[in-house]
Amino acid sequence: MRVPVPDRFAAKPALLFIAALFAAQLLVGTDLLFCVLTAAYVGLFVLGFNAAGGLLYPSGAFIFFNGTLTAIFGLVFKCFLGEPGEKFLLSPVTSMLAYCGGMGGMALAAFLTARLRPKRGLLAHIGSGEMMKRSAIGCLFFGIFVGITTNSAGEGTIGSAFRQVNHFIQMAILLATAYEIYRSNGERSTNWIVWAGGAWYLGTGLITFGKEGMFLGTLTWAVAAVALGYDFKVKQLFFMGIGGFLLVYYLVPYSQYVRNYKTGVRSQDLQIALHYLGDLGETRRLFIEQDETHDITGEPHLFGKPEGFFDRMNMLAFDDALIHYTDDGYVYGILPTLESYANIVPHFLWPSKPSFAYGNDFGRELGVITEDDTSTGISFSPTGDAYHEATWFGVLGIWPVIAFLFFFFTDSLTGSARKAPWALLPISLVSHTAPEGLMQGTIFLTTYGIVSLVVIVLFSRYLLPAIIAVFTGTGRGRLGTFTPTASSAGPAT
Image 1: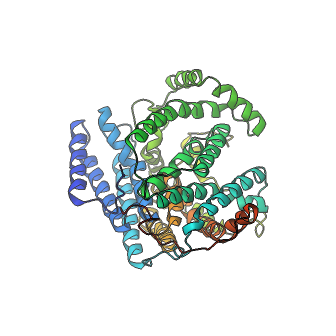
Image 2 (image 1 turned 45 degrees about the vertical axis):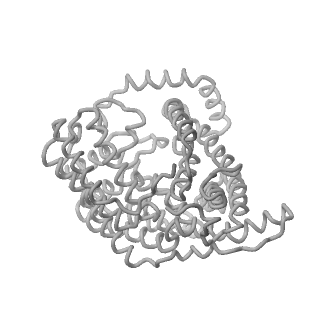
């Protein structure tokens, strides 16, 4: 079964979804104006997604993940819980108006990008063909090498610079998945490279207690498999469903609970990880016990009680709290945006360059974390950040420009994932940054992210395959252009 990858949402299903959500919200007692704003938000989401060209472009993927994981998923889930959409929000109307403004800005940016970007990505001709597997092997081992050697590298060093652009293992998984799909016409999607990259991410995620790390390998493979038309078997989907359930059932509670004991010293964290991994059932019980005694009334929340993993699938509650705080007279100013662009300057040219963590600064303003808490990461969407920095000028003026710059430059470089595999890397990266990276995350992807992409593509295409060829004695081989064919490109989608 091949999962369809939409390049646009058809009008009729989109309208039916909007109407169904509108009716469901009314049924559970949601305020009429809030229902109207929700419908408008989803409508703008559909228009922006269609204008961008769908999930196969980084801009379309950005809009998809931003829209679904800031508000749409959470508001749909509230209907299933029987809770009015605006319940527990402090400024529901203003928040939804800001969301509509932010999504409208992204839709406009996508519209302009689609008309200005080249028909074929500038990097698309730097294809892989028969060299794709060697490129993947090189990315895997180089990424692991960089990860190990730069783990303790200080700021301003060459090691820290490599650490910032080290998405090599992700690219290894993407290239290896693409290689198997192309050569098998969509019948296979994994090989030892995919499994090794996934195991690396899972292992490091378990040691660092990070949910993103634990799921990154699987999500990266899934992005490539779905985008490139892998033919999923029913048996595979069944076991993937069981595996996904077990990961969420055991590892999410593990991450949430054990991070309380994180020391930052790798050897000590490893001992802690092994202790709690030794009895995941008990670890889950401890987490539930802690969660049941946790009082959410003093912090932003969208649902009436803790919903575990589903609490992480929306940003509306935290954005609403930040918007409400801003309207009380606490406008932060655009310093975060200015400093994010100033962050382009390398550390060796700016030895005293500070580290920026504005999400945590905003969290301290809201009283969510204490002043001395430097380990907890607080996230907000780009829209919430834009409103806090400059109210409506931030939402309607600053954010659309930032979104356009990312959409245009990234789409122009990569093009569609159907024509070359390079678009898969930014598509996988925005799944996290788009909903919860603030505006600073998008600026980072537009600057260091593009540098990282170009470095990885050039390394993957030219240097790493040559190094692998030297060590394996297989010769350099011919470096063909990436040109999908009936035998190598997989099925048409």
